[in-house]
Image (spheres, rainbow, N blue to C red):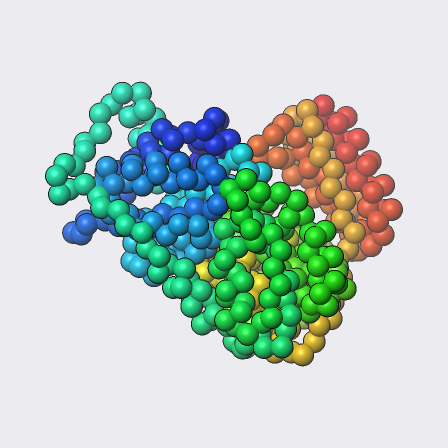
Length: 452
């Protein structure tokens, strides 16, 4: 698998890349590393462990719980809950560690392990590196220092986690959702019970699809990566809007009453204006990545909201928000972070806040999302090239300059080396889709010529 920890924990095919032995070993290593760092000093440590409904999550959960308890950590097992619920409960319960078993929007055979530090925040990179190093050291034979007797960890189910999280979600809403009919696509995932319950408690009339997880059907033709069913259901039921989550419900995409998609950029635009109106948008700024649609940037400029852009990845958005105290950030893919109420992207919270804006304003989601016009965007992946020379190739720099001159202020070009594959991503936006395709095609050819 190469380096175990990626941008969002450890992921791989369950029982092939990500085995029970690895899950147990990483959990023991995490406990030892946090103990070394002084996290457990002066008290008996506690961890919150949750998972999505994947079949493999059952044995991986057992391995994680066994590893933590064997290292002297008491475990609160919260069962099937979204990733942001585990993060929230880690903070709300004063736990020293949170562990979520999920591969998010990936297909069912995959799974993953994500660790949260005290407070529900992502572990620092240096701690992940240390966990990986300690895991490798002991995987090859070095014995663990193991507690015995009363020193071993105790394990209990924490069924109250469901209600605690739902109450938190409903409690932060600025207004109720009475009178709204909403279709929820739960991707047969971790929010299949939590999300409908939260929307109902907030006053909405709820229709659910993709809310019958059987361990095998997560993300299968439904959820935020497959919106066709949601679009049809919203129109069929005459709903005000639809909300789609992914497998671990840390992202949210939406559909307006006509069945048109509302993406993460549009959701950010709607929430930014709503939060500014309430005085909750600190510094009148929103954080997004360089992949955000140019239409979003132009809309924020027009509305007097400052756009702060980061590298691609919600981790970079979160780092920027925490460093400068911004309240709102996210990605086009639907990862939206409202830092006053969540330490990570929370799809259910995002959907609730979006619906609350519709209810409070008396305007349709289509009208609200119209604050920005999505410019046509074309993305071409160019494989088998030397991605390390993207920034140094003079031939490529000339091609990009010519493209930018042709597009002027109504378009833009972005060339980005893939972080995981030997390819370069060419993204072009323009006011006209044919122009975007033409420019993107020429740039893709230039990448092959210059870097092939």
